[in-house]
Image (cartoon, rainbow, N blue to C red; front, side):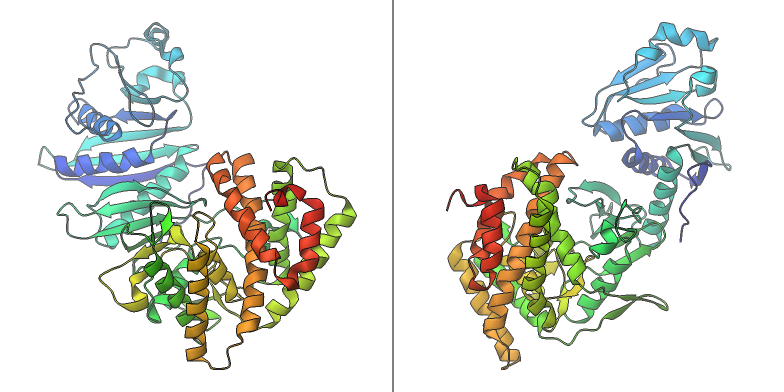
Length: 515
């Protein structure tokens, strides 16, 4: 396992390559590491392969393995456009002094350009302190063998440490030679890659989720993630993946792990979802709710193994966490709607009403609440049978909470419209399966909890999506607000939520303008 690098010190990664193919694969891996604005230097004596590696890097970044990439030995500078950022490839071998850089337009290179420099030592003090140095030297009798030392300086140190850890975990899990493809991420800070073996036999997914730093304190000196019981490293994912799989659910099998670096190589469940053309596929949604009924009918432990003797205890979805989530509506959604700041009295009343509303739901039996059980996180597996056809890929924020929460998450999907008749069929199917497993299952209590948790979840998501727009620059989530607003109006219509309904009507009248 790899310790997190100290960003104040350079981080070194030494690799032996024995063939041109291995050099090309290294270039592909390095291309995943690079960003616009980076400085990469290529060092070593004449004939060690600096231009060959630079050419492979440029081709990987451009996405064209046949791109003509001439050596810039005589032109000194060569430019390329890529889908991600521009590249400038420079060869300073013929540079006689650093002062000549100005005549080459060195200072005019834009800040978003990747600068790839051979013989960079001739640039002197013009080199940025944050950079990636790649040094090549011949290694052994074969002309194709090279010893490559990759050194990350300054802000690059952490990235090199992560790249080294990824290389190691892929090799240990049998995917060391895999082609890596970026996958679209989610609203979190996690990143994903699909790993495809060169022979085309088998694929996997790499999840990159390093431990995230604590945010500012919000309650009792604790950051939001701790209060809201959000996963702060990969241990919850590992525990729940194995726990779900052991109980017959289709969570991804784990192939390789680096706990310290936050890396998991896991089973690739594919791309086939439970919806098509932004519309739910009824059969798949019914099977997904059946999987929840099966899970909620089990006696589930609070503690699960992670690695060796390190257990993981699933946190309780307690009142403090649920209340803080509802406050996202006040902090982010109300300003988005142009509402004036709430009075202290109105804010206190909001908390008191939600406390009274949540109390009976939290007093009922709890279960594993996966929290992100909705269309983007469910994969359809037609080659399997029954509930195993539902692949579950997002559960690291699992808590011990009300069963109705995940049912509402699925049946009141925030990202697509679930027709009213399908929602009713799903609820009926869920209740029937729960009663078959336990004749004492309380249908009325579940209906009440479904309305409460649906309202709580919609309240939270209105705040989250407004925050994603305002704070994180992700306006694409705003298109979902009308759907979530409709869901919350329907949930608040439950008779038990009448006091809350009146608060929302009083303080967010625009929410009901379309009633």
